[in-house]
Every structure is written in structure tokens, then in C-alpha cells.
Image 1 (tube, rainbow, N blue to C red):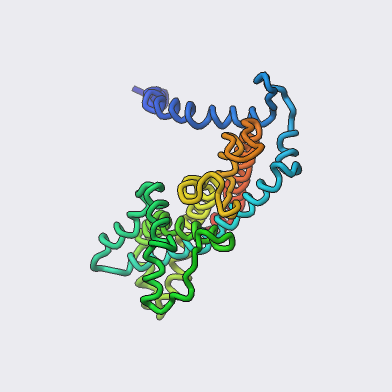
Image 2: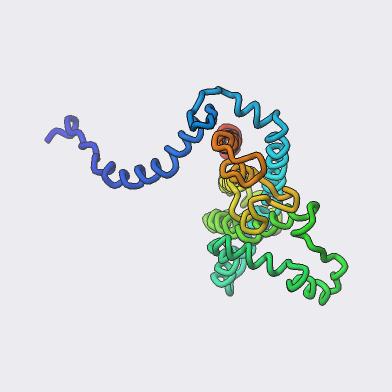
Amino acid sequence: MDQKHYHKPFPYHIFVFLAPAVIIYSVFMVFPLIDSIRLSFFTSTDSGQEIFVGFDNFVRLITDTLYSVRFWSALKNNLVFFVINMVVQNPLGLLLASLLVSRGFGKKFYRTVLFLPTVLSVVIIGFIWNLILNPLWGVTSGMMKAVGLGALYGPWLGLESSALATVSLISVWQFIGIPMILFYTALIAIPDELIEAARVDGANSWQTFWNIKFPLILPTVGVVTILTYVGNFNAFDLIYTMKGALAGPNFSTDIMGTLFYRTFFGQQLQMGNPTMGATVATMMFLIILTGVLLYTFLWQRRVTTYEL
């Protein structure tokens, strides 16, 4: 047969294998997202009738004191939550990954122990840390006194000034295994020849890391950054487990996820409006979409230019 006139048939069977996953994802993710965005442009009457109001719900969310105070507070807290995770979790994850790469004995054991909290239930994590930090029967006070730091102990989860930072650090502890594994995978993929050449040229460990390893794992740094961003602006379960729907004390741990829950399901006085809840959800989607687009068009382009 003439190879010039031979056309390989299109693999239509691929659609058969993809169909179940596409259908499930569409039913539980795509359609609810589209319907939530649609609902944000409507308001409901007492009879249940939906009336199109355009962007009125968004203006009300941002300007009406019934919603705007909690919205701006939740957005600010969410930014703080993200910054703490970004600044503490990811550098620590990179440090742990570097130590695992350089360590010989016990590498698998430490890797498993460090990643273990990530696979635990958030309910278990919240319950355990509430017990540990409890000022009446928790072990934190006794442990800090044993090492001479008892004066620094306080009811951190019960203070408005420290509750958000405390929950954020617990989130760091739970999910530090994810950036650690991603960085570890990127580091072990670096050819040994490059490291050996740097050592032959007289580079120390820090110079080797900063000038050889770090530039090569920049794509992974970008992936970890955007995963942290999306994960933190989608966060809900840990704060709900530890501080409840009202995100106490006095809404000091309130973020966009808990605000959406209260607004949609009516867990706060004068709230319980599904259309306004859909508006909060749409704002969350727009915030996340903005971050993803910035990552796609700025960070990836910068990394590509750097590699070239």
C-alpha cells in the first residue's frame, strides 16, 4: 500500500474511555458552576419567582452594609490566610525536599511521616488541634512551660488577634507535604552531571542550589504557587471544623468559603439568601480565575523566556 495515501483512522474509542469522567465532572462541577453564575444575576421573590437584576447583587455585595462589611473582612482574611501559607508552607516544603534529596538513611520514613497529615481527615485535624491548644486540658501549655516558654502561651484560638494566624499555621502543618513532594520530585529529576560540574568548579551547597537547582525547578515553583492560591481561596473545611460557620471569635477567621456558607444557607442573622450566596460563589470564582490567568500569562511566559 502506498504510504502517501494511507491515513491512520481517528481513535474514536478514546471518547468511550473519557465519557464517564467527563459526565461525572460536568454533572458535579461544570453545571453547578454555570448555574451558580446564572443565579447570581437573579433575585428571588417571596413566592420563589426569579427576577433578572443584572449586576445589582454584585453592587449590593460590595456596597450594602448588610453584606459588604462581612465580604471585605472575609476577603482580607482570605488574603492573610493565603500569604501565611505561601510564605511559610512553600519555603518550608522546599527546605524539607532539599533535605530529603541530600539525606541517605531513613529518606522513605521521613517522607512518609511528613506527608501523612495531608491524607488525614480535616475533621480529625481540627478536633485534635482544638484539644492540643485548649487552655484548660490541652498539652501546649505544659510543653511550653517545660522548655521555658510558658510566658508566651495564650488561648490563641480564642483571641481575635491570633485566631486566624493559628488556623493558618495548622493548615501549613497539614498540607506542607504537597509542596514538599512536588519540590522533591523536581529536585531528583535534575541530572547529577550538573551538580558534579558545579562542585568541580568550586561552588558550595548554597551556590549550587541558587544557581543550578532553583532555576531548573522554577516551573514547579509556579505550579506550587498556583495550587496554593487556588486551594486557599477555596478553603472552608478546616475553619468550619475548628471555628464553626460563624468563624469566630467575632468573625476573625472568616474567609470567603465560610461567608458563602452562611450567606447561602442562612447561618447568620438577616442572611440566608441563595442568590446572594451564588454571588459570593461567583466572586470566589472570579478571584481564582484572575490568579490563574495571571499565572498563565505572566509567570509561565517569564519562565519560558528564562529557559530560552
